[in-house]
Length: 333
Image: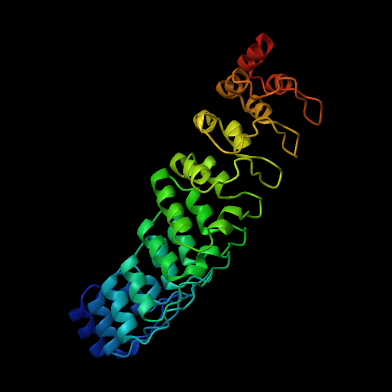
């Protein structure tokens, strides 16, 4: 194998080598890789052609379940050659139930996705954790690829991962916010499931609105509230709203934005969660976010005397976690 690999970058040298070593064309190394795997990995389409001409199996599988098509996924020329000449399975699964198209989606290789689709690749296959190609394109922020997959595989828009996450939720949680807005707004405005997307909750009870708020995707957040009438008080499975999350994470800019929005439904700023009966004020006090503590109290959005299920106030929590500046402020308030 090592002697053959010396020629993996040169079709002429490989052809000369195989004239006297034809029996090595389908040999594999200790990891199950054949020469076609190495040629595909090197994006050497001319070497792939030589190997094919000498009887190489273009559908050879290594120990990870990867075929040459998986290895060549960054090369348009190699992928086009393999699907046209190699009679390969374009839906072949590697470990984790990933097809070549899924790998292309993860990398945003739209040209390769189109080649595979035309060759019969399925756009709606799912991985072991329930992700489709659309999920994979979105998680790496590939806007054009995500839009294409959503249009050509509409069912993927409402396909949930094993944790209950919709593609729109992954998009809403993306950074930078421009990409988050571009993909999420496309999914909402170009599908027949807009209401279903807005009402969906994953296994933790979170929806697209909370995801957008946590990601500080403000253009998207405003659009969800003003254009799509999303409920500003939606909560997760332990009754934490976007206000709780902003207070916990120290996102004062999120709270200020929400405070100044003119919404048809009033935001509930001082509701306790169901875990510890903590209001946003108590979360901010525990985490040491003094600007948020000040914001909530100075705008009369919180009850300073509220006690959690163990009888603790915001002052008690700040004191327990040694946030002296907050303790001093609360004593003076």
